[in-house]
Length: 42
Image (cartoon, rainbow, N blue to C red; front, top):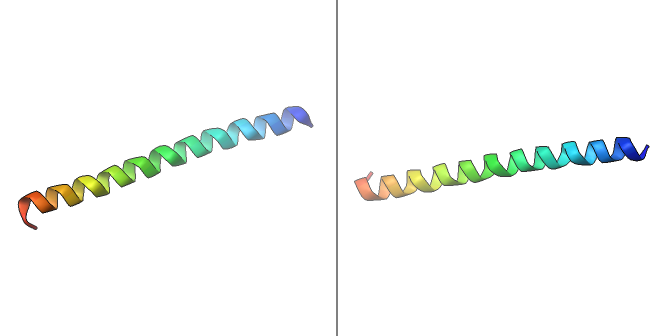
């Protein structure tokens, strides 16, 4: 049971890391879009 729990935790940690990276990338794209739009006047 402990091994299963550890495996699940490790998998969840990987999923959380991937989610965090995706969120960070999405935020960066949104900020880049806003900055680009502001500089071009769109």
